[in-house]
Every structure is written in C-alpha cells, then in structure tokens.
Amino acid sequence: MRFVFVMDPMERVVVDKDTTFAFQRASQRRGHTNLHCELRDVYVLDADVWARVREVRVCDSAPHFSFGPAHDVRLSDVECIFIRKDPPFNTDYLYVTLMLERLRGRALIVNDPRGLRDANEKLYTLHFARYMPRTLVTSDRDRIHRFVADIGKAVVKPLDGAGGSGVMVVSKGDRNTRSIVDYITGDGTRHAMVQEYLAAVYAGDKRVLLLDGEVLGAINRIAREDDVRSNIHAGGRVEPCEVTADERDIVVKMAPRLTADGLVFVGLDFIGGKLTEVNVTSPTGIQELSRHLGQDVAEHVISWAERRSADFRPARESVAAT
Image (cartoon, rainbow, N blue to C red; front, side, top):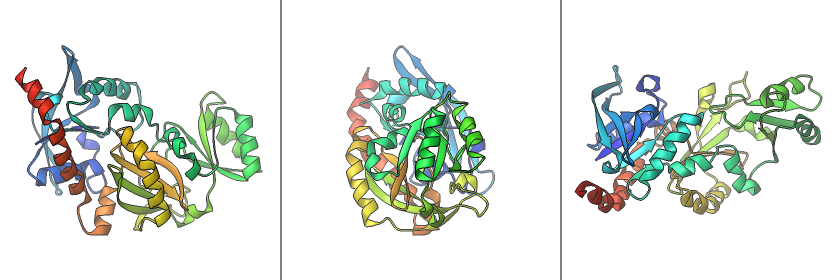
C-alpha cells in the first residue's frame, strides 16, 4: 500500500518522540511505501487533488531517513493520507484541508479535513463541557479578572497554541496577572481560554490516545519542578498509567461525536479526571505509550488503516478506470 504523510519537513522529526515517525516506521515494517509531502506540495489540477511527493525510508539509527526522487501522485489513488502537520492551524493549513476535502468518499484520510477545521483543540472540547473544569473563553480582560477572582487560581492559554506554548497560571492577588492577561489577549483583542486551576496537575496531565473511538492506552505527563506545563515538548517527563473507569466512560460518551466528525486518531487530555483538551491536529505520545506497554502501538494504527482503506477500493478503481 501507499501511505502519504502530509507533514512538516523530515528534518524536524524527533526520532524517539514523534508519533509520525512511529507511523512511518510501522508502515515500512509492514511492507508499505511511505510518501512524504509538505502543505505546499498539495495541489489541484482539473478538480482532482494531487501532491508532489518523495518516497521516504526511515531508520532508528542515523541517518534516520532517506528520500527517493520526487514525483506526482493523484491522492485518490493511494490507500491512506495521514495529515500530520504540527500546529498552528494557519491559512496554508486551511487551504490544504479545503483541497483535501475533495477526496471525501474516495480515499481514507486521518483525520478528516472538515473535522480538523471544525475541531480547534481548545474550543472543540466545549462540546463535552460537562466533563471539563470551569472554563471561560473571552477577549474581555475585565471578565477574565472577575473569573479569576471568583475561583482564585486559573490557567490561561491562547486558542492557537500547542505543546504548552503560551500556557500560564494566574492567581487572585498576583501582581503579574494583569500583565499576563494583557499579553495572552493582545490587550483585549484576542480570545483566550481560561480554566479553573486543578491542583491534581501535580500528579500529572494524562494523555489518552484513541483510535476510531477506542482506547489505545494512556501516558501520564509530569511537569518539571520549575514549570507549570506537563507537555512533553515543554520538558515534562512521562510515566506509565492506566485509564480509569470514569475516563473510559467519558470516552464512550464522546466517541459518537468524534466518529461523526471523522476524528479517528485523537489525544484526550485529563487532569484529575477532568477533560481539558481534545487533540486532533497531530496528536503525539504513541512512542512513549509503546515503550510502557512493550509493544508497537503504531502498528495497531497502520493495521487499522490497512483494513479501512479497503472500503475505498471501488472508488479508487473507478478513478483509475477514467
């Protein structure tokens, strides 16, 4: 099979951490061809979606990847397209999702382009607000200060951040709070998310990975002593953990909405049993989970893609015949 990875340059990949690298490695091990392209390489010709790609072969030892010659491929002819471009979701990302949407019903895409557009990783979580800590989304600085005064301590974060970027803690009576709120909101011109601070974060920020609505497993991310952020990219350490019965119950209730929106590979973040984010753009954590479980969880994802791609075979054959 041919799998296309729409992603960042391979030079940016962190070999022992990146989930995309794990997918490529598992796919290669199962005998498939991995094709790499960036957002700029996707194009539309005569209403069909194409990409300028290069075959990429990966290796755990340096050099960690090598490319074949560039060539063009019609994306409706391949078995699966993995959209793995890291955030932020910018204008270029938007245009590519609009182009890739022309493949709906003709190719397997993980995650669905429309789902990616609709699922801002902060705001999409509000569909499941009953499982969240108290949350405010606003650009109004006075409203934020009243909210913080009411609950005492809060986490404030930009709506377009990722990997812990821009996440800060504010408190009632802290003289830094006004400066932080001014900065995050751009002096009241940008919306921000403000959430009740959960002291349980000291025990970890749990990432639960889902595939097609089913739990693959979880990792627990612990912040450094000198940081409030637990994200791996921010230096948080990772420990094994279990998914609780209550968390599994939340997953069951969320799954129909995730499936309806085409969000197949998803990372849910829980602190003290409370849902804080739904990560869909380029969820990470599968390498850490694999090490904890003693098995390559990425192979489960690739195996699933092998099975699901068969559903699109008639459409691919029809395109090929024309």
